[in-house]
Length: 352
Ligand SMILES: Cc1ncc(COP(=O)(O)O)c(C=O)c1O
Image (cartoon, rainbow, N blue to C red; front, side):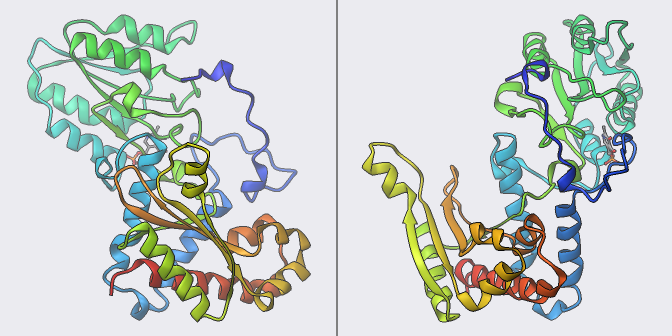
C-alpha cells in the first residue's frame, strides 16, 4: 500500500461540489459539504416516494445489494461481508457485544478519537474489568509509532481510526494489523474520513475484525448506477438488448470484452457492453452542450463479479448532464432518459 507521502497531491475536486470560487471551506471534519452526486442520489431517493406505487418488493433489495457489492469492491471484501448499521457507534457496539476480554487485558485507543469508536469500548472495559489505554498525542505527530509502542501481549483490542479526524493524520493500519496478529489482539477500525476517499483500503492486507464507517464520504456516487441481475451475464445482456429495441432505440454495438480478452490469451470474467440510443433523445442534449457527444450514445455494461453475481451498470444521465453543464431547458429530456434507462435496466435484471 502506498503511503500518503508517496501519493501525488490530489487535484482540485471543486467541480464535484457546489462551492463558489470565492469560498474556501476548510472544516470538513466537523461538517463536510456533500458532493453534488450525493445530493442528486438523495433527491432521486426522495422523489421515488412521490409515486410509491412504482416501488416493488424487489426494489427494497436491489439498491442495497448494489451498494453492498460496490462497497465490497472498494475494500477488497465480498458482498456478504458487508452489513448496514444505523451509525458507526451501533456497528462498534455490535463488535463489543461479540468480544470478551479478561481483566488482565487492555483496550487501546487514541487520544481525541471520535467518540463512536471510544464509548462502546469504555463500556466493555467497565463490564469486563479490562484496562482502557489512551495513546496520547505524540510530540512528533507519528500516531502509528506511538500506537505500536502501546500494543503488547496484554492487548486484547486495538480500536483506532484509519485517519484521525482532528488532524487528518493517517495511521499505518497494515503495520498495526501485523502487530495485532502477532500479539493476538483484535483490530477494530473506524474508516470514516478516509475509506473510499483517500488511499486504497484493503481488508485482506490489514485483516481487521471489523471496519465501521459513516457512509456518506465513501458512498459519494461516481455517476454510475449499478443493479444486481437475477439472470446470468448472457441472459441479462440478451434481455437488455431486446428491451432497448422494444423501446424503439437503435443498438449500435455489443462489445464482448471477455471474448476480446480470450483472443489475446487473457482471461476476464463475463464483461459485455451495449451501446445504444436514438438521435431524437440525444440531439437536444448535444444542442445544449456538444461535448456530451463523447458520452453518447448511451452505454450499459453487464458484468459478473468474483462471487458469480451479475450486475448491470450505466452512467446516470443527470450526472452526465452535470458533467457537461447542460442547461435547464433539457432537464425534462434528461429525466426522461433516466426513467427510460431505469425501466430498461429493471426489465433486463428483475425476475418476473
Ligand atoms: C471519525 C468519525 N467517526 C464516526 C463518525 C460518525 O459516527 P456515528 O455514525 O456513530 O454518528 C464521524 C462523523 O462525522 C466521524 O467523523
